[in-house]
Length: 412
Image: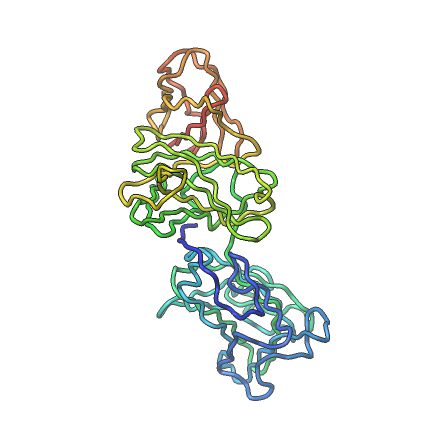
């Protein structure tokens, strides 16, 4: 997934509560149909909130009644999400839409999102898939069992602009009920060892990703340059250490990790000093162990700035770049304070072999894949020895030397 950025508070009525990755949080139509407008609607029964049909059987709740009497694609649409609101949950990217449907067997529903002027994103479904003369119609979901609530879900890819969710009834003369509508960003747990090519997006700055090397270069073109993990969560109960490999091509000397406090009271900042104008990639193991680092953390922000010389920090110098090469999440530090920054792997990317320059005889070499699985282990015989990787598949690996070095290696 290749998407984009930022963090803002969402401007919705107080009756809706949103996490940072959610545009609509399971709207259950408990008392009304706030934020929804009916279009091309039947006169009787009119579309709108209905207190007599509810998925949970509560006498104080209801659902949304979607009526169609002319076959004219009657639909309901949610209030438009502005570009700023979209950026508040990560901007461009994959979003999961889910809801429950109820009505007569065969009633058909489809979902579309207007995503900027003249752009329509059509959802496709895998469950309750509609058929026409036995042919699948993935853009349409159909009720399979009469008067039984059925759950449907789909994922759409949206651009970084305004968006309006629309749900259509396309069965003439039908009434279909909707409940617990949810729209949220598609997220997954951060892999134990990975790179910055996916899942990370610039905030308050621009960046580029090299698809060949996997290097994500953050430009220092703003006083507050950041990368955010909009596609990844971190299990903070298990993973306590972030190990980050970067090459700093600027005079900014501080890397700050920002994350929401687990008690919901704000944001925690963890500052670490980084070297400046690097000649080689450096590795930093950041221990986030703290009572506020617990549960599921989302999003994680990496913020580059300057120390002010008196124990505090100031905004970034707006020149140069920072190359982010790799990130590892682990229960304990994956590197130690004796990290040998003078060991270099070349050529990198490599095709059939690489050389570990400045390694010594009997140094232990271990190579891991991005899932953290050991795929190769050997003892180096001499400095500048050719180490064959012909047996490895193309991809990204991490080489450790003497269990204290984590070097990123790309097999072409």
